Image (cartoon, rainbow, N blue to C red; front, side, top):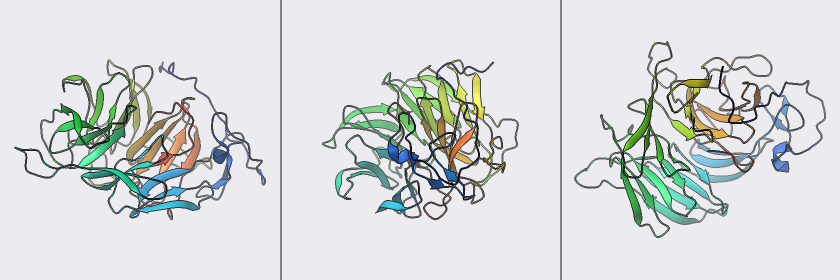
Length: 345
């Protein structure tokens, strides 16, 4: 029996779509979440009953945009780099990823108020990239540096106040890590794309837990639309389990501390409300709501499949981002702006 004890799971059956929608906020979510939106099939998604709508910020097509639930773009910032992380800060600013080795804090009126650029640290002399970063509660910024093989914490003055070494058996400045998150207990969850491993480090850099992805009884195939072990994201859940966005493992999987899989969303398991299949490709961003719903990114899946999906613990699809004018096939950074307090990202 699957262990669903960490949230009160809810099941939201799909109802017939009414021609008129009365705006009403979903519990714990601002009124903006109740605006009528359109999915690819032209059906309204709303917060009154079984479906929801979200405001989304994300980077793709050479820009960062905020997309409103009705499909309009309300904010735009140039960003040519295919960003792998993004954060909306408590002060309303955005932490963005405009170059492989650079992050910037940008205000709503598009002023850069803080930035960090990573460089190789001797004796290492090759390229350095950033694929995961996080503004911490104390105001410092955690940054994972490939090439340098370290996780650093940088204060608002731009000073490194902590440096944690990471272990990579086969170093690759592009694939050493993807997303990294600091946990509530002060450890670091690092996704090692090139190794197919999620590793947890203590503050000295010691590996205290790891989980190795497997091919899930499917053959390994190449390309962005293939199947493999290139893990992208991991979050520590309140019950101590770890939720993993598998990258090109094509699934979301929850595992216990003793490495047992207790819940998953498989590659071709989900369906749209109208019955059409949803094929998962690179599973990237993860957002876990207090009610147990999971929002995840579905990158590189192509225009026949949504770029982001929200599901209940019973795997009912209650929202999809399916907008190929606002975003394209490389949306790794989707962040819903209207999720309730207590959402994990």
